[in-house]
Length: 209
Image 1: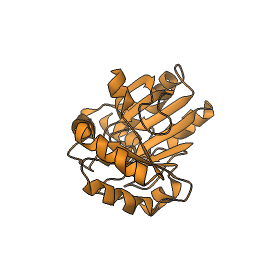
Image 2: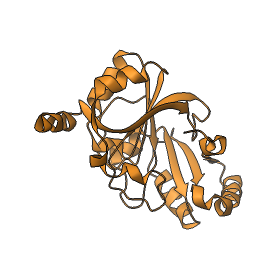
Image 3: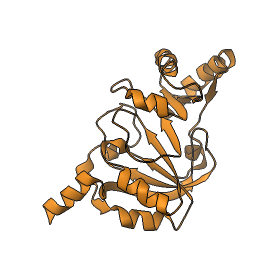
Image 4: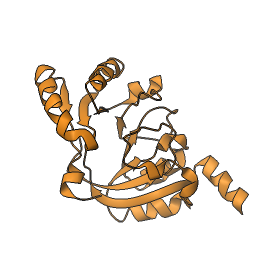
């Protein structure tokens, strides 16, 4: 039975589900919009400031058949956000195909460090220095969201902005634990570089998931 379940995970018909919940999108272009979030376990990018480190070890999250995930998601919203962890560590084709059959709008939040699988209506690329995105992720990105912990991250943000397609929206987001120091820096930077916008983790201010 265990081997059969592992085979399903390998194929993407089951995924290591950490959690699934209905809430408001807190960040980026779609902030304030209702969406059903599907958080997939597993990530090897290892950002020191990650606020969901419990998602890193996929073995801690039970393989869940995608049909159950889809049935739950469709009870809540037409907008589905796949996040992690790093969801592209897994084959996203079966999950997104099943959601598309239900006429869902499907968003992803990803570092872009793995090959793209799945069908996406909105592609939020959040690149990390530890493991840079694949070239195809830069081309696919609808939204570039760079987390800023200190001034050096602004240099990284500009480097990443050079790689994305010309229609990609550009966001700088203060790292939550350092936000009081970073937010004034971002305000000044965006005033001087208006191609960027500031993204805040509004869900944390609203005290929602």
